[in-house]
Length: 48
Image 1 (cartoon, rainbow, N blue to C red):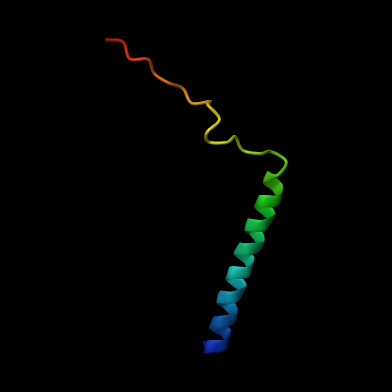
Image 2: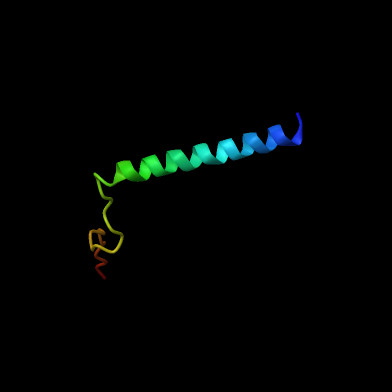
């Protein structure tokens, strides 16, 4: 395998991953994830 073939394979792999990442992000816009600091955490009361 020569260097040009290897470089083309690596670039193709990276572009494929970028495409999947963008598609997943666009799909997630319909169902937004809950925010981390929204106060929905369950707390445990500690009694002495």
